Image (cartoon, rainbow, N blue to C red; front, side, top):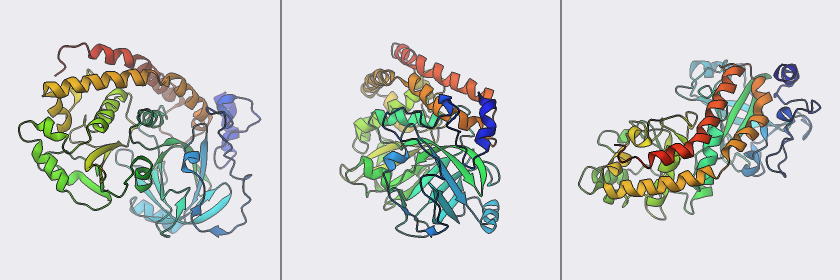
Length: 413
């Protein structure tokens, strides 16, 4: 099936499968939600009149990130802009954004990533910013889009599944589906289409979304590690970061911790990170990353928001053995907090088992399979994709029993 579809997929600039093929894995009308419109043809919905329209596109961001939809995104960047990105991947350059056959611009485009960083002529992760050159520029209410290249995830679905688990548990997290990207008429392949962690995401989850937010980038609440909290929204007032850092150095640190951190929200985030095996993110990594820290003005407490979930659903030798962030290690060192953590982990384990993630994995795989096959810029083989998906499936099917087993162990630390 994959070889039969390859030439059909390459025949379209955006990598949209031929709907006459009859194969459900390649059919963009495959619908995990019965009412979801999955038509992503860019040349039928709107006729391109050749005009460049202001970057203000109406619509619902919920529809843009809906399951059952592989979005088709086209970008046009001048040769001057392409060279600027070759010279400095992090610089913003002007681009045209083509959506459903209509041109919008100028929008800003830059390359993103660290370990996943790739050049503009390879398969780079991209930020598309509608407000870069026009302050009120928006796409379905969003100021920016994040398009991740998935070079660290041969399954091509870890991010989408991990964010779903967080959101199903009511823990703040981006929406995510998939998109194909075409740049200057060259197919760049399949991307994880992840909601940007910014003001718009905060508005979805918090009644007061105007507080400060920091990306946790090699940071922790330890002396000397506060520089890694990189301010992204609101005022960069680090008074509460300093206060929590100081509180964690003294006696009764876990009791005082919840004077600064929302207790229920922390446990929801912490136990979900453990369940999905995100050992690369806070509080499992040292120093921490793959998270944002939001100070909610309503309750005056810190809340955690995950990002960068491409290295998830990975085995561990016991989740309590692989904790390094001070919020986690302080909790494990205090009997009451540790008992509470285990109770909360048991509840998260039960709730995660009820999500039927195995069926969801099969649905997503069927939805994106043909697009992934046609992705000539991906850095792994189709066999690697199949093996990675089998690993993720085995993980999610075995995780409930493994977590339940760990909760019977007398001591993990």
